[in-house]
Length: 285
Image 1 (spheres, rainbow, N blue to C red):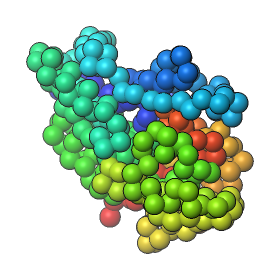
Image 2 (cartoon, rainbow, N blue to C red):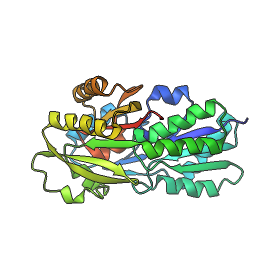
Image 3 (tube, one colour):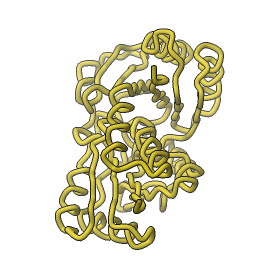
Image 4 (tube, rainbow, N blue to C red):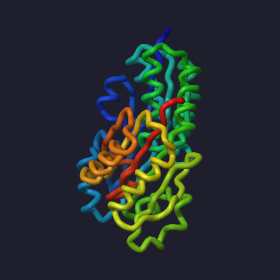
């Protein structure tokens, strides 16, 4: 069976070692900051980004790769892997124009078989779908069956995030269903989720430690006694909070696989300093 190239965007937050292990191609989102434009995770790394975010007065903005960039990306991936079949899993379409650019590029490359999937998530909510596809590809599973596997994982995926402030989400135009919380937090931390590909408000919690504990309580409620197949903690360069959350999760739900990583700058632009979240899905029954 011919190889299927697995591709995604930088907002999938995939750990670099897994990108390398499964030979996943990643197209970077754009970050515009003042007069400068960066490529997410390429010309602007997370550690430098969060340091600058705390220091700079301007708010960064993001944009999707252009149609031309997608054409070059798809063709380069096909050439590198010597395949004409590409499976792309991208950032939620209600939150970004990334998939729309990919669809336009797909139409301009009729000699390639390009299958595009709307992940309906951000961060490792996308990443776990990409990993599902990459593992299946290594087992020579057909494309149609891979997309079915991804759909199953996607239907069970949950993602929750706690922010220090809604200001970055508001300025980036992604506040959506959390708009009614804006301006009313009074030192409370907003708790958000992803539903139908959009950001929704789940409530607000007073205090950093309590907000982390509330994430674990939400996790337990969603799992209802099941074990997470995989779980990721993604954070805005706040390792102490991530370590506390990881210890609580290991003790209380014991996921089969736990990943911890830093939110890519393109997501940090909207989450702001202090953001931390979890993405997970349960073991198959």
